[in-house]
Amino acid sequence: MIKIMQMTAFDVVEVAKLEQACFSSPWSEQSLLYAVNNANASYYVAKENKKIVGYGGLNYVIDQGYIGNIAVDKDYRRMGVGLSILKSLISFAEEKKLVSLSLEVRKSNKAAILMYEKCGFEYAGMRKDFYIWPTEDAIIMTKAFSKEGE
Picture (spheres, rainbow, N blue to C red):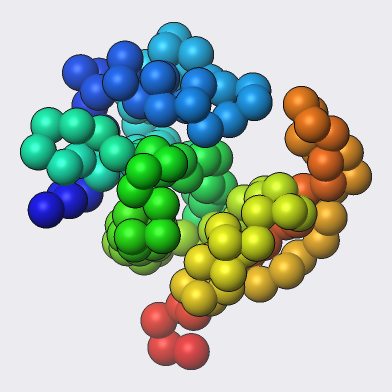
């Protein structure tokens, strides 16, 4: 059974390996350690037993959130792991009463785009040549949260 839990400094080495496996420009252990210790951030890991099979996180300033990465081990994709992580990030954003979340996703990453749309994210624009190795445009997606009383 896969469980979603708050990421800790003890998870950083394994998450860094997942970053290297999933992304052409991975975050370093140092960057991940900074992120997990950032008071204006929330990072989650997906664990099966003690193995980290996915992770994701967001940073926020005042009432705006930004999802940096969601990564899932290739052997665990299409099993709802990324969706569970995303739902945890959305719940965190709602608890913090954020007004919106935004993210970038590779234009070719149709599975991720569908997952974000399923959770209420909408197309907000494009960043030309945002990604490198290979060079590719990013789609900007946002999710707005309604304020109480609206």
